[in-house]
Length: 300
Image 1 (tube, rainbow, N blue to C red):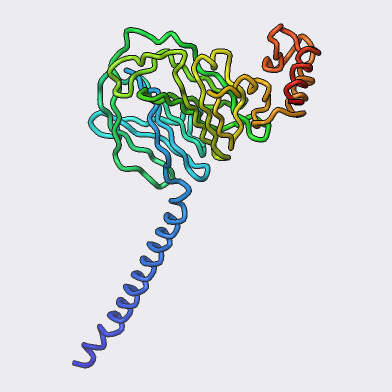
Image 2 (tube, rainbow, N blue to C red):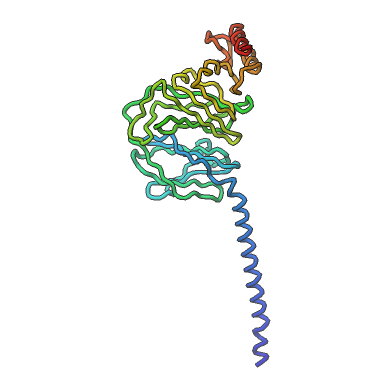
């Protein structure tokens, strides 16, 4: 009887040992993966998710991550996994960004879609957006044009949002040169029911979000017809005040009028100007008259 029991004693103990080791390894790997995800999550979690440029057949969805992350959107009518759309800067394969900007096209008017943002190992809950009805009239206003700087250097990755009370949010990417252009000819009411009735006196706000910082600017549409002054990260400008008349002299957008702005005029001196803003009197050439105008502002 003892021999019979001994036959199974060693294999049983060996089996129990293997089981215990296996459980321990599984717990270790599980905790390790949980630790990895918990460390990665704060950097790759989508923040400031914003819907903008909503039309009858397209929409833009943008968001921010703390660290450069590969991210994209899946969406559909019946479920959010029908199609996948990459960041509009990515071709072929997704690339890591901190500012993410996805444009979804070829949508149906007045239709609700479901979507998810997939970033690293994280997927958001199912979210929704609804497209607008077609427009039969346009506002007739020109696009809002400007530039974003960081210490006098063009910002290479930023999203610029345009907001007007009771209207939809519009947006654009700041390109490598720091320039942006936001069309408002098809601006809609916030409820998407119709085009928004714009006037020259309407006050708009630009909100600029970048991995390097933020900025904002208030302005009247009538003052933006010739382009806005450059906006530096960290600035909070109010161009609706009388100070706007002098803001065209702030050529580097740092909120000050000084020798740095004068240097930009000197860099563009002559008929072949690279920066049209240096032509302060708009006569087609940067010359002594422009230097005199700048000197007058600096000495005030």
